[in-house]
Image: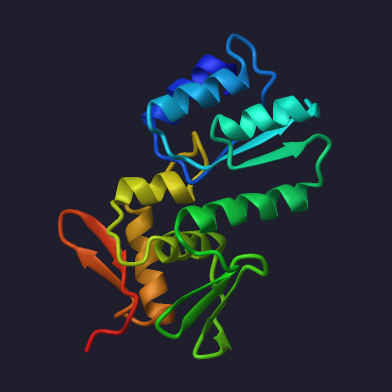
Amino acid sequence: MRDGEAAERELKAEAYAAAVLDLGLPRKDGLDVLAALRRARVDVPVLVLTARDAIPDRIRGLDLGADDYVLKPVDLDELAARLRALVRRAHGQPQECLQAQDVVLDAAARTVRRGGVVVPLSTREFDLLQQLMLSAGRVLSREQLEQRVYGWGQEVESNAIEVHVHHLRRKLGAELIQTVRGVGYVLAREAAR
């Protein structure tokens, strides 16, 4: 985002899996943005990324509702791992691997196994499956999935999610992802009996 005000508007308007918030934003300080989000009951996991290393700054950031506080410079692999951990915890999944039925997704290794056998997935298929597994048992609309799978501002074909769901069903079994007509998709935690 260009500035703190734009970041606050966007985070209040759209649902994100997580947010990386710099404190030195123009027009509105990152801590003020964080405080406004928490007052508005926006529960997106927030990782503060900043050069402000004073203990009082860190304490204030965490007390205002930051889920993690990382000092610059940071290794990008560590930042990615911290974001994955925030998203997992926000969905009640503390472990790195997600499992539904006999499908296991390892986010760090970006691999998927069914019945112990590696199943090759495209990047979008993997990202879609990960979002469905993080929300297993809950229905996600096509719009929610598009927001979570595609980057901000990316063009998305009108039937892209449907195509990826079709490919996932073909590769992992038709019973894994269920369609809720007129609403969206849900990943079944256990096989239908």
